[in-house]
Image (tube, rainbow, N blue to C red):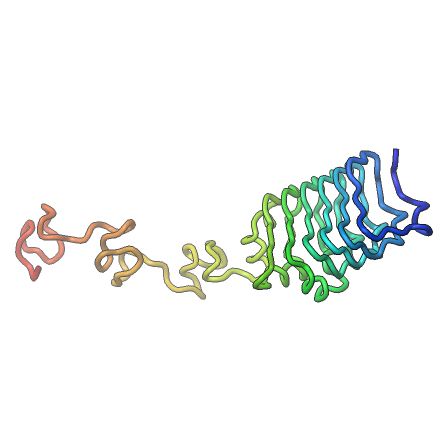
Length: 238
């Protein structure tokens, strides 16, 4: 059984790809210190005793994708700090105990930001903090493809991370900050639409009446004395 790669580093020459999966007793990746650049991909998958990525701390460039997934005891991505180029995507998924992704983009964030088309972080049930400086920069890139889902509260959805990075806004589709409704009310947003504000707004069909939220607007044939009527469906200006 393989628990480490120690002993490989002095003679290591890997140029195309490095992929390891289903090594149930692998505990670390020491021995891969000589790994600096790959033309294709780097992947560590389904290594349930893996606790550290420190042995790949010299890895800088991955031509295709970088994947860390299904590693049941890994808590941190420390070791990926030097990565500054990934040509396709980074995938971080299904790591049961992962709580720390700060290593991504830590050393050369601008280089990694300019090279990376897609970032996928999902199904890491203990991961609640995703608003790292690099991810906040990435999520605000107009062309960036970011899939964040099914992590812990705080990093469960892309919208959670966007709010954590940028703060509440009046167009984020959430009731947050001091808003009194979704994207309305409070100190910064427009007042929330009500059925008593003296304005025809929202879905109202008249001033403060009609639509899905307010009482029906008075008419001359509703069988009720309402509006300015002086009798049931009669009198008044209308």
